[in-house]
Length: 172
Image (tube, rainbow, N blue to C red; front, side, top):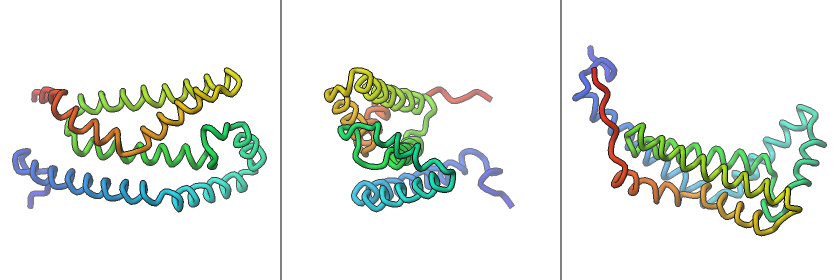
C-alpha cells in the first residue's frame, strides 16, 4: 500500500496542495477571530504570565520591568504583549509559508519581518535612551501595530507571488 510519502511526486502534489490550502484557510480564520477578539487572548496570556512569575518567584522583577515601560508603548502586560506578538507573527509566517510555496520567497519574508522587528526595537530602545522620546515610542508602536496585523500578509502574498520568481528546483 502506497502512502503519501511513498507515492511519486506527481501524485503527491495534489495532497500537498490540499494540505497547504487547509492550513491557510484555518490560519486565516484563526487570525481573523483572534484579531477581532484579542482582549480575552491578552487576559489569558496575562494570567498565564502572572502565574508563571509567581511560581518562579519573579513577581517583583516583573512588576519593576512593567513600570519601566512607557505608557506610549503599551498599557498591557509586557510579557503578554510580546508573547501575543510572537504567536501572531508565527501564525502569519506559517500562513505565508503555506501560500508562497518557495524557500526563496520565505527568505524575503523573514528578512522583511526581521527588519521591521529590528526597527521597532531600535525605536523603542532609542526612545528610552533619549529620555522617553515620545516620537520614537509612537513610531515604534505604529510599526508594532502594523507587523502584528494581517496587513503584512495581505501585502506580501500578491507582491511576492507576482514579483519574486520561484526558486529553481533542486536537481536530483
